[in-house]
Amino acid sequence: MLFKIDVIDQKAQPVLYVRTRTIMGDLPKIIGESYHKIFEYLKEMNENPVDAPYTAYYSLDMNDLDVEMGFPISHPLPEKNEIKSGEIPRGRYVTCLYKGPYSQMEQPYNEIFRWIEENGYEKTGVYYEYYFNSPTEVPESELITRIAIPVK
Image 1: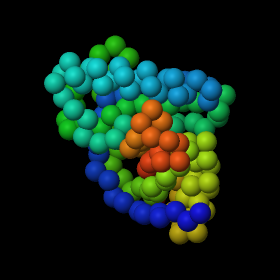
Image 2: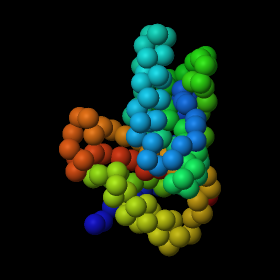
Image 3: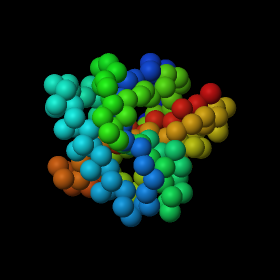
Image 4: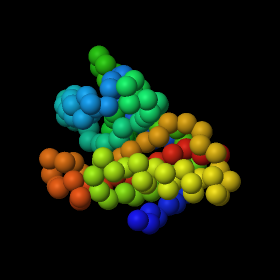
């Protein structure tokens, strides 16, 4: 399968997020709970997300994932309990839009990693996945995810 890979220069993006550690088997539940908490808080604040929800992967150890789930917002907002205010850093990102099941995302990641190496870039940080729909809305084959990896 071919993937369209792009390089973008992204501005810093304010976000509300929850960061935690978990194992791969618990990740879907953790993501759902985190998005729900953040979305309810946004409603309390009479605010709306400005882009798709994301999960940031600080580690890819499937037995000890360090992850951040959040929503991009238009401006910084106050924190509340485990909901933190922060930003996705500005910088250059290699991105790929993937359509299909989450269980098969290894393939686009491998394509991106190969592309980064072949084009003289170096990965510099956290891996981001933006989810444009969810398994509760569409069949797995129709899931749309944008992967974004910071590079230099």
